Length: 263
Image (cartoon, rainbow, N blue to C red):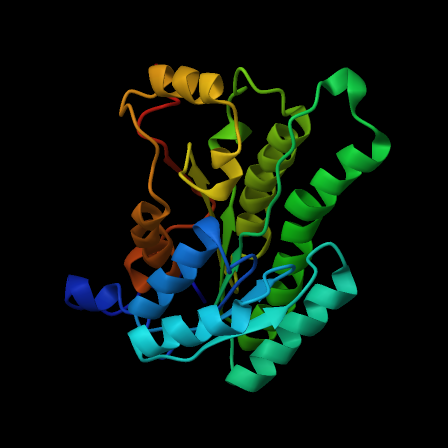
């Protein structure tokens, strides 16, 4: 059982992922890229999926060279249940086993709720919520057969508050769904998998860099830390949840936001 009491060991050894195999969806850039790097630095062999990145294989080779573990890129579409299941099964067969899956792929749009088209609303849900579930479901089927496994979702502080001044109702709703989904799966799958969430605040990625300067100024005025988070600052949290250091932790939502959600 994933929550069975582990043997007591030196605390630093509990963070090691040596000998474990992990999958990260949307791992070619942004938060996902840093998650891949962090898991690899901790000793895991890592496969990551991508959708449009043209140099994904080169990215994987670079991380593998720098960390000394196996890192491979796989094209996959989390929106398509058959596609992501096939990709996860393929990776598991090639790596020999699967220990950790990070459902990270996501997109954001900023549209007035009165103006959302059905297609625009559906696309957000297909990637952020449906895709996260399809990823977890495919992994969960493997984990149940193995008797062990670990799912980590990338959610957002947008799951627990309403961001301003941008209008992103669909994104917020999708991420709130991810947090609740993780809680439900943590209970439903407690016999064979741990399931947790990480909810980042404002992270310095391409997703934020395209926004108007006035938006950024308003965000900074609302963040007690008074700066954006570098994606590399999230690596440790993902390694923690992926490792035995968090062996009794399931159903949690780790908020990492420079105190943005506190005032």
